[in-house]
Length: 123
Image 1 (cartoon, rainbow, N blue to C red):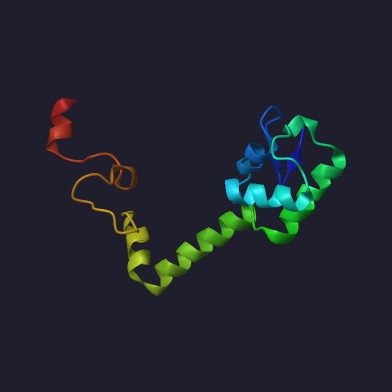
Image 2: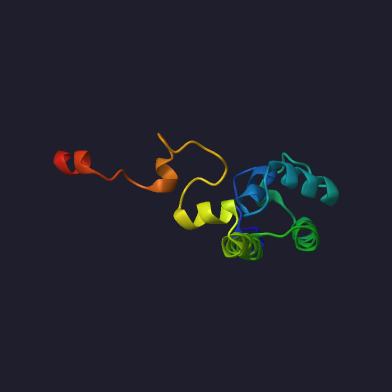
């Protein structure tokens, strides 16, 4: 089983799809990694040799920020926005949509369940 950047890749998927299970690597990054390593995109994860796995691991370590380090970096960026008090930081603090979406209707994912008397009456 391929274990790259602390993530177990699914054995039966194509390697181009399997690499996207790593946080911080999407389809285009995955294709770029495989072209640099000289590995066919249609190859399955279970068919990788140890050398190919090692090449992929080295490319990811040298050229990409992934998993825990990326999550920490994103959290620090959000914290910085909140500390300087900019508009985006204020939206993060309030738990509101940050990127200009409307909030009069919708935005339930970010704001949580509805509150109010109508909900209480239904129960």
